[in-house]
Length: 399
Image (tube, rainbow, N blue to C red; front, side, top):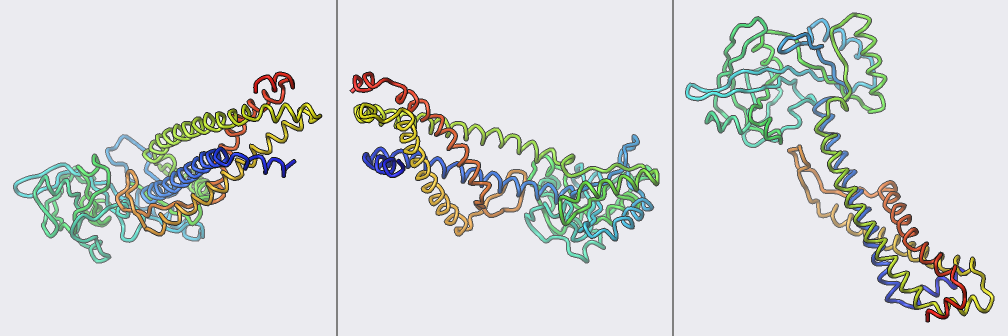
């Protein structure tokens, strides 16, 4: 039966070629799209975690403009996590806002005070001109200024600006800051006000040793729940006025973008599947119509309905297997060529260019293959059932 089915699909080479081509190209598109989407999501997720940490500790909102985590709380948390092998890094940040400018011009700024070599906000910045802050700069009154602010107040790297803030005692505090470089966050609204400072400089401006948040980075994302349980236990035990959040609670931009792209790519998947269903169904139907006399003759000489059904189903299965093989090979060729070309792109909401890569694996292959096999099966099963259920006289009469 299998040999007969194999022989039958090559009786009309043009039809076989068109069917395999449609299935193969569809498999290729779905595999590459699925691979690209998954890779892009991984990049966006990594960027979100770099900015928020796997777990983040914040001061509970008590009605103050800028609630802070106090020094004693910081030391207690760091001591609690010091011996935990799951913790890769702990970064602290301090939010500062006020006016930045020169003698001639000024504008509002929202700054983030960060520590050196931590995975906080500074790692997500793109340097437009000048230099990043070095280890030595983190002990100085240096800063990174958004290019938008620099344009507003007519300054550039190497210039000094005046920062005016209201400190924790409600007193105005002024300090000069040296512009090491101009940067971009990748978010237009944020660039209008963004400044990055060394944490010590930010604490000096506000007259505090506290921080706005502590970001905890882990070796393994699976450890998030256990770390949260540990921290919540510490907070409850010592009655600390703090809250703990995981990165998912803080990554609204990532999930908003992911939901949008999920909808777009789901729509593309549906369009491809509909086109495949219509095309394959039409080709199979035409093939069955042309073979009515043959099917009628087989029935007349004693071939049972279920045997004809199995034969036609095997032919459809061979079409699909050939299409899968073609699609996988074609997808591997395209993905390998693209990866070797080292094409780069800037993902939405990011600044740094990343490689445009297709990381094909079993997961990326299984979904489109399973989806298209199901669609192809549905689009061919009904014409086959209809044909095999017809009486011998009706089949021959259609010729």
